Length: 557
Image 1 (cartoon, one colour):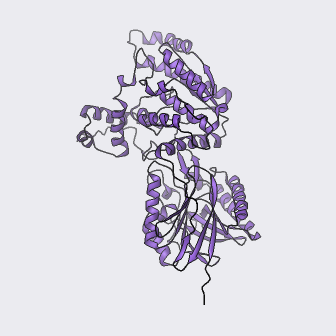
Image 2 (cartoon, rainbow, N blue to C red):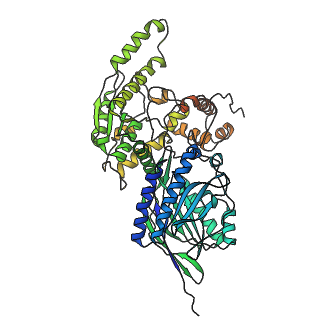
Image 3 (tube, rainbow, N blue to C red):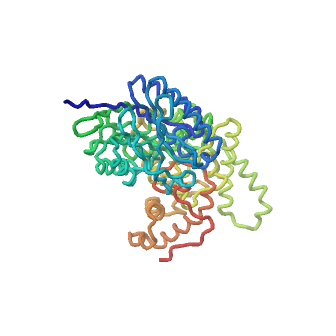
Protein backbone atom coordinates (compact mmCIF):
# COMPACT_ATOMS: atom_id res chain seq x y z
CA UNK A 1 0.00 0.00 0.00
CA UNK A 2 1.35 3.41 -0.97
CA UNK A 3 2.00 5.72 1.98
CA UNK A 4 0.19 9.07 1.87
CA UNK A 5 2.65 11.89 2.53
CA UNK A 6 1.63 15.05 4.34
CA UNK A 7 2.42 18.75 4.04
CA UNK A 8 2.37 21.57 6.56
CA UNK A 9 2.14 25.24 5.63
CA UNK A 10 3.51 27.75 8.13
CA UNK A 11 2.98 31.49 7.95
CA UNK A 12 6.02 33.05 9.59
CA UNK A 13 5.12 36.47 10.99
CA UNK A 14 8.43 38.28 11.44
CA UNK A 15 6.70 40.84 13.63
CA UNK A 16 7.62 44.03 15.50
CA UNK A 17 5.55 44.15 18.70
CA UNK A 18 5.37 47.18 20.99
CA UNK A 19 6.50 46.54 24.55
CA UNK A 20 3.54 46.40 26.92
CA UNK A 21 0.93 47.15 24.25
CA UNK A 22 -0.69 43.80 24.87
CA UNK A 23 -4.01 44.41 23.15
CA UNK A 24 -2.36 46.38 20.35
CA UNK A 25 -0.10 43.38 19.76
CA UNK A 26 -3.22 41.19 19.84
CA UNK A 27 -4.80 43.27 17.08
CA UNK A 28 -1.64 42.88 14.98
CA UNK A 29 -1.76 39.13 15.59
CA UNK A 30 -5.34 39.10 14.31
CA UNK A 31 -4.25 40.93 11.17
CA UNK A 32 -1.40 38.46 10.72
CA UNK A 33 -3.81 35.56 11.11
CA UNK A 34 -6.10 37.01 8.44
CA UNK A 35 -3.10 37.29 6.11
CA UNK A 36 -2.06 33.73 6.97
CA UNK A 37 -5.53 32.56 6.01
CA UNK A 38 -5.28 34.34 2.66
CA UNK A 39 -1.97 32.56 2.08
CA UNK A 40 -3.55 29.20 2.82
CA UNK A 41 -1.47 28.53 5.94
CA UNK A 42 -2.26 25.79 8.42
CA UNK A 43 -0.39 27.50 11.25
CA UNK A 44 0.59 31.11 11.98
CA UNK A 45 3.85 31.44 13.94
CA UNK A 46 4.56 34.56 16.05
CA UNK A 47 7.82 35.33 17.89
CA UNK A 48 8.99 34.77 21.46
CA UNK A 49 6.98 36.66 24.11
CA UNK A 50 5.20 38.39 21.23
CA UNK A 51 2.08 39.33 23.16
CA UNK A 52 4.00 41.53 25.64
CA UNK A 53 7.23 42.25 23.73
CA UNK A 54 10.82 41.15 24.26
CA UNK A 55 12.60 41.59 26.56
CA UNK A 56 10.02 42.69 29.17
CA UNK A 57 12.40 42.73 32.15
CA UNK A 58 10.56 43.33 35.45
CA UNK A 59 7.43 44.54 33.66
CA UNK A 60 6.43 40.91 33.30
CA UNK A 61 6.37 40.50 37.09
CA UNK A 62 3.34 42.79 37.41
CA UNK A 63 0.21 40.72 38.09
CA UNK A 64 -1.82 43.03 35.84
CA UNK A 65 0.55 42.34 32.92
CA UNK A 66 0.36 38.59 33.51
CA UNK A 67 -3.45 38.81 33.63
CA UNK A 68 -3.74 40.84 30.43
CA UNK A 69 -1.33 38.59 28.52
CA UNK A 70 -3.41 35.56 29.41
CA UNK A 71 -6.64 37.36 28.49
CA UNK A 72 -5.25 38.37 25.11
CA UNK A 73 -3.97 34.89 24.32
CA UNK A 74 -7.27 33.31 25.35
CA UNK A 75 -9.21 35.80 23.20
CA UNK A 76 -7.08 34.88 20.19
CA UNK A 77 -7.49 31.20 21.01
CA UNK A 78 -11.28 31.53 21.03
CA UNK A 79 -11.14 33.02 17.53
CA UNK A 80 -9.46 29.91 16.14
CA UNK A 81 -12.83 28.15 16.42
CA UNK A 82 -13.60 29.60 12.96
CA UNK A 83 -11.61 26.83 11.25
CA UNK A 84 -8.88 29.16 10.04
CA UNK A 85 -5.16 28.86 10.77
CA UNK A 86 -4.02 27.76 14.18
CA UNK A 87 -1.54 30.01 15.99
CA UNK A 88 1.78 29.51 17.76
CA UNK A 89 2.43 32.53 19.95
CA UNK A 90 5.03 33.48 22.54
CA UNK A 91 3.65 34.66 25.87
CA UNK A 92 4.42 34.82 29.58
CA UNK A 93 2.27 32.26 31.36
CA UNK A 94 1.46 32.06 35.06
CA UNK A 95 0.89 28.42 35.93
CA UNK A 96 -1.41 26.92 38.51
CA UNK A 97 1.73 26.27 40.58
CA UNK A 98 2.32 30.04 40.81
CA UNK A 99 5.42 29.94 38.58
CA UNK A 100 5.77 32.41 35.72
CA UNK A 101 7.27 30.88 32.59
CA UNK A 102 8.31 31.92 29.10
CA UNK A 103 5.80 29.95 27.02
CA UNK A 104 4.86 29.05 23.50
CA UNK A 105 1.11 28.45 23.19
CA UNK A 106 -0.63 26.49 20.45
CA UNK A 107 -4.06 27.98 19.80
CA UNK A 108 -6.40 25.77 17.80
CA UNK A 109 -10.03 24.74 17.69
CA UNK A 110 -11.12 27.66 19.87
CA UNK A 111 -8.84 26.86 22.80
CA UNK A 112 -5.30 26.92 24.13
CA UNK A 113 -4.58 23.45 22.77
CA UNK A 114 -1.06 23.10 24.22
CA UNK A 115 1.61 24.96 26.16
CA UNK A 116 5.34 24.41 26.21
CA UNK A 117 7.85 26.30 28.30
CA UNK A 118 11.38 27.55 27.72
CA UNK A 119 13.70 25.21 29.58
CA UNK A 120 17.07 26.93 29.20
CA UNK A 121 16.81 30.49 30.49
CA UNK A 122 19.68 32.76 29.37
CA UNK A 123 21.38 34.70 32.12
CA UNK A 124 24.31 36.45 30.43
CA UNK A 125 25.03 39.45 28.24
CA UNK A 126 21.76 41.36 27.74
CA UNK A 127 19.65 38.52 29.14
CA UNK A 128 18.53 37.98 32.72
CA UNK A 129 15.53 35.69 32.29
CA UNK A 130 16.31 33.75 35.45
CA UNK A 131 15.39 36.94 37.31
CA UNK A 132 11.79 36.84 36.08
CA UNK A 133 10.96 33.34 34.79
CA UNK A 134 11.00 29.82 36.15
CA UNK A 135 12.48 27.23 33.79
CA UNK A 136 10.18 24.72 32.20
CA UNK A 137 10.78 20.98 32.06
CA UNK A 138 12.29 19.39 28.98
CA UNK A 139 9.43 19.76 26.51
CA UNK A 140 7.53 16.93 24.85
CA UNK A 141 6.44 17.31 21.22
CA UNK A 142 3.04 18.88 20.55
CA UNK A 143 0.65 16.99 18.27
CA UNK A 144 -0.83 19.36 15.72
CA UNK A 145 -3.26 17.77 13.27
CA UNK A 146 -1.38 14.52 13.49
CA UNK A 147 2.11 16.03 13.19
CA UNK A 148 4.49 15.98 16.15
CA UNK A 149 6.00 19.44 16.47
CA UNK A 150 9.09 20.17 18.52
CA UNK A 151 8.73 23.67 19.96
CA UNK A 152 11.97 24.82 21.60
CA UNK A 153 12.15 28.51 22.50
CA UNK A 154 15.22 30.53 21.46
CA UNK A 155 17.97 29.64 23.97
CA UNK A 156 16.69 26.05 24.05
CA UNK A 157 18.54 25.34 20.79
CA UNK A 158 21.88 26.86 21.86
CA UNK A 159 22.73 23.67 23.74
CA UNK A 160 21.89 20.16 22.56
CA UNK A 161 19.77 18.82 25.45
CA UNK A 162 16.33 20.18 24.55
CA UNK A 163 16.48 19.25 20.86
CA UNK A 164 17.95 15.85 21.72
CA UNK A 165 15.00 15.22 24.07
CA UNK A 166 12.47 16.33 21.44
CA UNK A 167 14.05 14.06 18.85
CA UNK A 168 14.07 11.10 21.22
CA UNK A 169 10.41 11.64 22.08
CA UNK A 170 9.22 11.65 18.48
CA UNK A 171 9.33 15.20 17.16
CA UNK A 172 9.12 15.31 13.36
CA UNK A 173 10.30 18.90 12.91
CA UNK A 174 11.48 21.87 14.97
CA UNK A 175 9.64 25.20 14.99
CA UNK A 176 11.64 27.67 17.08
CA UNK A 177 10.34 31.09 18.16
CA UNK A 178 13.01 33.61 19.05
CA UNK A 179 13.82 37.04 20.43
CA UNK A 180 17.44 37.11 19.27
CA UNK A 181 18.93 40.63 19.24
CA UNK A 182 21.40 41.90 16.70
CA UNK A 183 25.12 42.18 17.23
CA UNK A 184 27.68 42.20 14.49
CA UNK A 185 28.59 38.51 14.83
CA UNK A 186 25.16 37.04 15.45
CA UNK A 187 23.96 35.83 12.06
CA UNK A 188 26.84 33.40 11.65
CA UNK A 189 26.49 32.21 15.24
CA UNK A 190 22.78 31.49 14.78
CA UNK A 191 23.33 29.48 11.63
CA UNK A 192 26.16 27.50 13.24
CA UNK A 193 23.96 26.62 16.23
CA UNK A 194 20.96 25.74 14.09
CA UNK A 195 23.11 23.60 11.81
CA UNK A 196 24.49 21.66 14.77
CA UNK A 197 20.95 20.94 16.03
CA UNK A 198 19.53 19.77 12.68
CA UNK A 199 22.53 17.55 12.01
CA UNK A 200 22.34 16.00 15.49
CA UNK A 201 18.59 15.45 15.37
CA UNK A 202 18.01 14.79 11.67
CA UNK A 203 15.03 17.18 11.84
CA UNK A 204 14.32 20.27 9.76
CA UNK A 205 14.20 23.56 11.66
CA UNK A 206 12.06 26.62 11.04
CA UNK A 207 13.58 29.54 12.96
CA UNK A 208 11.39 32.63 13.46
CA UNK A 209 12.95 35.77 14.92
CA UNK A 210 11.33 39.02 15.95
CA UNK A 211 12.28 42.32 14.33
CA UNK A 212 12.51 45.96 15.40
CA UNK A 213 13.91 48.07 18.22
CA UNK A 214 13.28 47.82 21.95
CA UNK A 215 15.29 50.36 23.96
CA UNK A 216 18.97 49.45 23.37
CA UNK A 217 18.23 46.20 21.56
CA UNK A 218 17.49 45.76 17.88
CA UNK A 219 16.09 42.50 16.55
CA UNK A 220 17.10 41.80 12.98
CA UNK A 221 14.59 39.18 11.91
CA UNK A 222 16.37 37.19 9.18
CA UNK A 223 14.22 34.16 10.02
CA UNK A 224 15.14 31.00 8.13
CA UNK A 225 14.45 27.37 7.38
CA UNK A 226 17.21 24.76 7.55
CA UNK A 227 17.01 21.17 6.34
CA UNK A 228 18.79 18.22 8.00
CA UNK A 229 21.40 18.10 5.23
CA UNK A 230 22.35 21.72 6.10
CA UNK A 231 20.50 23.19 3.12
CA UNK A 232 19.39 26.76 3.84
CA UNK A 233 15.93 26.35 2.34
CA UNK A 234 14.66 29.88 2.91
CA UNK A 235 15.49 33.14 4.67
CA UNK A 236 13.34 36.20 5.27
CA UNK A 237 14.68 39.73 4.85
CA UNK A 238 16.74 41.19 7.68
CA UNK A 239 15.54 44.28 9.54
CA UNK A 240 12.07 44.22 7.96
CA UNK A 241 8.65 43.31 9.31
CA UNK A 242 7.19 40.77 6.93
CA UNK A 243 5.35 37.47 6.53
CA UNK A 244 6.33 34.44 4.48
CA UNK A 245 4.65 31.13 3.75
CA UNK A 246 6.98 28.19 4.38
CA UNK A 247 5.92 24.71 3.33
CA UNK A 248 7.22 21.47 4.82
CA UNK A 249 6.67 18.26 2.89
CA UNK A 250 6.95 14.69 4.11
CA UNK A 251 8.84 12.15 2.02
CA UNK A 252 10.40 8.71 2.32
CA UNK A 253 13.24 10.18 4.40
CA UNK A 254 11.05 12.32 6.65
CA UNK A 255 10.16 15.98 6.52
CA UNK A 256 11.93 18.67 4.51
CA UNK A 257 11.37 22.37 4.00
CA UNK A 258 10.43 23.10 0.40
CA UNK A 259 13.07 25.54 -0.92
CA UNK A 260 11.92 29.14 -1.20
CA UNK A 261 13.44 32.58 -1.34
CA UNK A 262 16.78 32.97 0.43
CA UNK A 263 17.22 36.68 1.08
CA UNK A 264 20.89 37.70 1.35
CA UNK A 265 21.94 38.94 4.77
CA UNK A 266 23.37 42.50 4.60
CA UNK A 267 27.12 42.96 4.83
CA UNK A 268 28.42 44.30 8.14
CA UNK A 269 28.34 47.97 7.13
CA UNK A 270 24.77 47.74 5.88
CA UNK A 271 23.68 45.69 8.90
CA UNK A 272 25.22 48.14 11.37
CA UNK A 273 23.64 51.10 9.60
CA UNK A 274 20.22 49.46 9.44
CA UNK A 275 20.42 48.43 13.10
CA UNK A 276 21.18 52.02 14.14
CA UNK A 277 18.41 53.45 11.98
CA UNK A 278 15.76 50.95 13.08
CA UNK A 279 16.75 51.18 16.73
CA UNK A 280 16.47 54.96 16.53
CA UNK A 281 13.19 54.86 14.61
CA UNK A 282 11.45 52.48 16.99
CA UNK A 283 12.73 54.18 20.14
CA UNK A 284 11.39 57.56 19.01
CA UNK A 285 8.15 56.36 17.42
CA UNK A 286 7.21 53.78 20.07
CA UNK A 287 7.69 56.50 22.69
CA UNK A 288 5.49 58.81 20.57
CA UNK A 289 7.89 61.66 19.92
CA UNK A 290 6.96 63.69 16.82
CA UNK A 291 10.56 64.02 15.61
CA UNK A 292 14.14 64.67 16.67
CA UNK A 293 16.51 67.57 17.13
CA UNK A 294 20.31 67.52 17.32
CA UNK A 295 23.32 69.77 17.21
CA UNK A 296 25.04 69.66 13.81
CA UNK A 297 28.62 70.72 14.47
CA UNK A 298 30.27 70.10 11.12
CA UNK A 299 31.95 66.99 12.58
CA UNK A 300 31.64 63.35 11.61
CA UNK A 301 29.55 62.08 14.52
CA UNK A 302 26.72 64.58 14.32
CA UNK A 303 26.66 64.28 10.51
CA UNK A 304 26.25 60.51 10.71
CA UNK A 305 23.53 60.79 13.35
CA UNK A 306 21.69 63.38 11.24
CA UNK A 307 21.85 61.04 8.22
CA UNK A 308 20.56 58.15 10.31
CA UNK A 309 17.71 60.30 11.59
CA UNK A 310 16.67 61.31 8.08
CA UNK A 311 16.83 57.68 6.98
CA UNK A 312 14.61 56.78 9.94
CA UNK A 313 11.98 59.54 9.85
CA UNK A 314 12.37 61.62 6.72
CA UNK A 315 13.82 65.13 6.58
CA UNK A 316 10.62 66.83 7.72
CA UNK A 317 10.92 65.29 11.20
CA UNK A 318 14.58 66.18 11.75
CA UNK A 319 15.74 69.56 13.03
CA UNK A 320 19.44 70.45 13.18
CA UNK A 321 21.01 73.35 15.03
CA UNK A 322 24.46 74.78 14.41
CA UNK A 323 25.53 76.36 17.73
CA UNK A 324 28.71 78.35 16.97
CA UNK A 325 31.07 80.10 19.35
CA UNK A 326 34.30 82.00 18.76
CA UNK A 327 36.28 78.76 18.22
CA UNK A 328 33.91 77.40 15.56
CA UNK A 329 35.83 77.40 12.29
CA UNK A 330 34.58 78.66 8.95
CA UNK A 331 35.02 75.11 7.63
CA UNK A 332 32.67 73.76 10.30
CA UNK A 333 30.04 76.38 9.50
CA UNK A 334 30.25 75.53 5.80
CA UNK A 335 30.30 71.78 6.35
CA UNK A 336 27.31 71.77 8.69
CA UNK A 337 25.28 73.92 6.30
CA UNK A 338 26.20 71.69 3.35
CA UNK A 339 25.32 68.52 5.28
CA UNK A 340 21.94 69.98 6.26
CA UNK A 341 21.28 70.94 2.64
CA UNK A 342 22.21 67.47 1.34
CA UNK A 343 19.84 65.89 3.88
CA UNK A 344 17.11 68.49 3.39
CA UNK A 345 16.54 69.04 7.11
CA UNK A 346 15.28 72.11 8.94
CA UNK A 347 18.46 73.98 9.86
CA UNK A 348 19.01 76.87 12.27
CA UNK A 349 22.09 78.73 13.43
CA UNK A 350 21.90 79.81 17.08
CA UNK A 351 25.00 81.59 18.38
CA UNK A 352 25.96 80.72 21.98
CA UNK A 353 28.20 83.71 22.75
CA UNK A 354 25.65 85.45 24.95
CA UNK A 355 24.88 82.51 27.26
CA UNK A 356 28.54 81.45 27.49
CA UNK A 357 29.70 84.97 28.28
CA UNK A 358 26.87 85.27 30.77
CA UNK A 359 28.03 82.16 32.59
CA UNK A 360 31.62 83.41 32.60
CA UNK A 361 30.53 86.76 33.97
CA UNK A 362 28.44 85.18 36.73
CA UNK A 363 31.28 82.84 37.68
CA UNK A 364 33.98 85.50 37.41
CA UNK A 365 34.10 86.36 41.13
CA UNK A 366 34.28 82.66 42.07
CA UNK A 367 36.98 81.88 39.49
CA UNK A 368 39.10 84.98 40.11
CA UNK A 369 42.79 84.12 40.40
CA UNK A 370 42.44 80.73 38.68
CA UNK A 371 43.70 79.69 35.27
CA UNK A 372 41.19 78.97 32.48
CA UNK A 373 40.93 75.23 31.77
CA UNK A 374 38.37 72.63 30.70
CA UNK A 375 35.87 74.23 33.07
CA UNK A 376 35.46 77.19 30.75
CA UNK A 377 35.55 74.94 27.69
CA UNK A 378 32.76 72.79 29.06
CA UNK A 379 30.54 75.83 29.56
CA UNK A 380 30.29 75.95 25.77
CA UNK A 381 29.09 72.36 25.60
CA UNK A 382 26.65 72.91 28.46
CA UNK A 383 25.22 76.02 26.83
CA UNK A 384 24.64 73.99 23.66
CA UNK A 385 23.01 71.21 25.65
CA UNK A 386 20.68 73.67 27.37
CA UNK A 387 19.61 75.22 24.07
CA UNK A 388 18.90 71.83 22.52
CA UNK A 389 16.84 70.80 25.53
CA UNK A 390 14.90 74.07 25.34
CA UNK A 391 14.04 73.41 21.69
CA UNK A 392 12.98 69.90 22.68
CA UNK A 393 10.74 71.24 25.45
CA UNK A 394 9.16 73.85 23.18
CA UNK A 395 8.48 71.67 20.15
CA UNK A 396 8.35 68.17 21.61
CA UNK A 397 11.16 66.64 19.56
CA UNK A 398 13.61 64.26 21.22
CA UNK A 399 17.21 65.45 21.49
CA UNK A 400 19.69 63.01 19.96
CA UNK A 401 23.17 62.74 21.41
CA UNK A 402 26.06 62.00 19.10
CA UNK A 403 28.99 60.61 21.10
CA UNK A 404 30.63 57.47 19.74
CA UNK A 405 31.89 54.49 21.77
CA UNK A 406 35.52 55.62 21.67
CA UNK A 407 34.58 58.90 23.35
CA UNK A 408 32.15 57.28 25.77
CA UNK A 409 34.84 54.77 26.74
CA UNK A 410 37.35 57.37 27.87
CA UNK A 411 35.01 60.10 29.08
CA UNK A 412 35.69 62.49 26.17
CA UNK A 413 32.22 63.96 26.61
CA UNK A 414 30.57 66.56 28.84
CA UNK A 415 27.90 65.72 31.35
CA UNK A 416 24.86 68.00 31.01
CA UNK A 417 26.34 69.25 27.74
CA UNK A 418 26.90 67.16 24.63
CA UNK A 419 25.62 64.16 26.63
CA UNK A 420 22.16 65.77 26.95
CA UNK A 421 19.46 63.91 25.10
CA UNK A 422 17.13 60.96 24.93
CA UNK A 423 18.85 58.52 22.57
CA UNK A 424 22.15 57.95 20.79
CA UNK A 425 22.15 55.72 17.70
CA UNK A 426 25.98 55.58 17.47
CA UNK A 427 26.69 55.00 21.16
CA UNK A 428 28.04 51.48 20.51
CA UNK A 429 30.12 52.33 17.43
CA UNK A 430 33.83 53.10 17.73
CA UNK A 431 35.12 56.22 16.01
CA UNK A 432 36.70 54.41 13.08
CA UNK A 433 33.46 52.51 12.53
CA UNK A 434 31.64 55.84 12.34
CA UNK A 435 34.04 56.97 9.61
CA UNK A 436 33.52 53.70 7.76
CA UNK A 437 29.74 54.02 7.93
CA UNK A 438 29.87 57.61 6.65
CA UNK A 439 31.78 56.51 3.56
CA UNK A 440 29.48 53.52 3.12
CA UNK A 441 26.28 55.59 3.35
CA UNK A 442 27.53 58.07 0.74
CA UNK A 443 27.80 55.14 -1.67
CA UNK A 444 24.73 53.11 -0.62
CA UNK A 445 21.09 53.60 0.23
CA UNK A 446 19.30 50.41 1.34
CA UNK A 447 15.67 49.96 0.33
CA UNK A 448 13.10 51.20 2.79
CA UNK A 449 15.06 54.17 4.12
CA UNK A 450 13.64 57.69 3.88
CA UNK A 451 16.83 59.63 3.23
CA UNK A 452 18.20 60.61 -0.17
CA UNK A 453 20.56 58.57 -2.30
CA UNK A 454 24.05 59.79 -3.11
CA UNK A 455 26.28 61.92 -0.95
CA UNK A 456 24.67 62.84 2.36
CA UNK A 457 27.85 63.59 4.35
CA UNK A 458 30.26 66.11 2.78
CA UNK A 459 33.65 64.64 1.97
CA UNK A 460 35.52 67.23 4.02
CA UNK A 461 33.65 66.13 7.16
CA UNK A 462 35.10 62.66 6.61
CA UNK A 463 38.65 63.72 5.81
CA UNK A 464 39.36 66.58 8.24
CA UNK A 465 40.88 66.07 11.68
CA UNK A 466 38.22 65.60 14.36
CA UNK A 467 37.91 68.39 16.91
CA UNK A 468 35.54 69.54 19.63
CA UNK A 469 36.43 73.18 18.81
CA UNK A 470 36.35 74.29 22.45
CA UNK A 471 39.62 76.21 22.18
CA UNK A 472 41.87 77.63 19.48
CA UNK A 473 43.32 75.06 17.03
CA UNK A 474 42.10 72.13 19.12
CA UNK A 475 42.02 68.57 17.79
CA UNK A 476 40.92 65.37 19.52
CA UNK A 477 44.45 64.03 19.33
CA UNK A 478 45.61 66.78 21.70
CA UNK A 479 43.93 64.74 24.44
CA UNK A 480 43.62 61.24 23.02
CA UNK A 481 45.75 58.76 21.09
CA UNK A 482 45.02 58.63 17.35
CA UNK A 483 41.66 56.95 16.92
CA UNK A 484 42.99 53.84 15.13
CA UNK A 485 45.27 53.26 18.13
CA UNK A 486 42.61 54.15 20.69
CA UNK A 487 40.03 51.89 19.06
CA UNK A 488 42.49 49.00 18.94
CA UNK A 489 43.24 49.31 22.64
CA UNK A 490 39.55 49.70 23.55
CA UNK A 491 38.58 46.70 21.46
CA UNK A 492 41.09 44.67 23.44
CA UNK A 493 40.05 46.00 26.85
CA UNK A 494 36.28 46.06 26.32
CA UNK A 495 35.27 43.52 23.68
CA UNK A 496 38.00 40.93 24.26
CA UNK A 497 38.79 41.51 27.97
CA UNK A 498 42.52 41.35 27.23
CA UNK A 499 45.09 42.11 29.88
CA UNK A 500 47.40 45.09 29.69
CA UNK A 501 50.30 42.69 29.15
CA UNK A 502 48.56 41.09 26.17
CA UNK A 503 47.97 44.47 24.56
CA UNK A 504 51.59 45.51 25.10
CA UNK A 505 52.70 42.21 23.58
CA UNK A 506 50.44 43.00 20.60
CA UNK A 507 52.51 46.12 19.96
CA UNK A 508 50.69 48.91 21.81
CA UNK A 509 52.71 51.41 23.85
CA UNK A 510 52.58 50.51 27.54
CA UNK A 511 52.01 54.04 28.86
CA UNK A 512 49.21 54.56 26.36
CA UNK A 513 47.50 51.29 27.25
CA UNK A 514 47.65 52.04 30.98
CA UNK A 515 46.33 55.56 30.45
CA UNK A 516 43.41 54.31 28.32
CA UNK A 517 42.61 51.63 30.90
CA UNK A 518 42.55 54.30 33.62
CA UNK A 519 40.31 56.59 31.58
CA UNK A 520 37.99 53.68 30.82
CA UNK A 521 37.43 52.97 34.51
CA UNK A 522 37.06 56.56 35.73
CA UNK A 523 34.49 57.39 33.03
CA UNK A 524 32.01 54.83 34.35
CA UNK A 525 30.08 57.48 36.28
CA UNK A 526 29.51 59.41 33.06
CA UNK A 527 28.30 56.36 31.17
CA UNK A 528 25.75 55.62 33.89
CA UNK A 529 24.18 59.00 33.09
CA UNK A 530 24.32 58.67 29.32
CA UNK A 531 21.34 58.28 27.02
CA UNK A 532 20.54 54.76 25.86
CA UNK A 533 21.76 53.74 22.42
CA UNK A 534 21.65 50.88 19.94
CA UNK A 535 23.62 47.74 20.81
CA UNK A 536 25.95 46.81 17.94
CA UNK A 537 29.06 45.21 19.45
CA UNK A 538 29.46 42.14 21.61
CA UNK A 539 29.78 44.26 24.77
CA UNK A 540 27.82 47.47 24.84
CA UNK A 541 28.01 49.71 27.89
CA UNK A 542 25.10 49.08 30.22
CA UNK A 543 23.38 45.77 29.45
CA UNK A 544 26.50 43.81 28.49
CA UNK A 545 29.27 45.44 30.47
CA UNK A 546 28.25 46.28 34.03
CA UNK A 547 31.12 47.69 36.03
CA UNK A 548 31.07 49.42 39.43
CA UNK A 549 31.45 53.19 39.43
CA UNK A 550 33.64 53.21 42.54
CA UNK A 551 36.52 51.01 41.45
CA UNK A 552 40.25 51.23 42.19
CA UNK A 553 41.26 48.12 40.25
CA UNK A 554 43.99 48.58 37.67
CA UNK A 555 45.76 45.79 35.81
CA UNK A 556 49.28 45.69 37.34
CA UNK A 557 50.43 42.67 35.39
